[in-house]
Figure: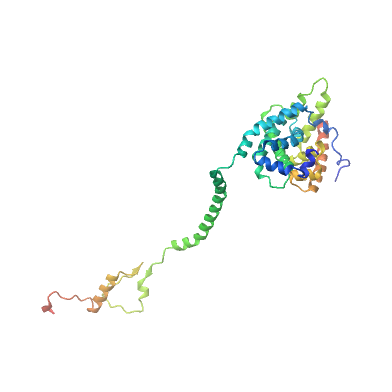
Length: 189
Length: 142
């Protein structure tokens, strides 16, 4: 079972792992890290488009989650709670990085591509990342979680604490906006 | 209006997917997280001292006490306002207008408090002795 499905239902041994991690059990916390870190990295990368920044973000999110573990209500899903924390941190980090960097995030992602091999791919990434960044935060998050990372609507609804229907309509609206933005980008040249 | 095809994912979006990380890279990243978590985990393992328990109780206690104090202060406000009202001066003259007061009797026309007992007694003696008359020191002069 991957982390996406666990975000929807706190099944299996997760409540025990959380309870043990609360008491400072290293193995239990390591199991949670092992379970969620890959998917968390993928989500973080969807926002930041930078490997090191994404790893730092996941690192910080796990530490913060451990510090705030007592605020997680018993019986509620660690996954949904953790992804919520991660998404908020990703949005904040991107704002901070955008202020600090002279070059924007899509450019830094494209810069890691080998210029000879993947210039078209780099251009596509740059374009898509720019368009995604233009969306309101909630719509962008839904596109990243659903279209990029394969979260289902019920899972996204749990992460963002919104009704499932709202999630669906937001995704539809986000895709429409993205298409318009990408068309503008093309016309912009 | 929903545009046709708006419910399909955007083409090429997978270009934004995270690159593959090797098992060693993943392990290194996880180890880094666990190393940073060591201190917090150790703190969680340590049993809370009585002071920490007290502090944990103290916070909600402090909030509750503040609320009680605020309610108390709010309920005392009208009482205090009533207390602080300056009493209207009592005009004695109005009170005794219906009563005949012999002329010459020194009277306090305005009083803020009850008259002094000695003053009342003195006034009564004077009245009894007749129109402010003073008992002569030499009885033969009567």
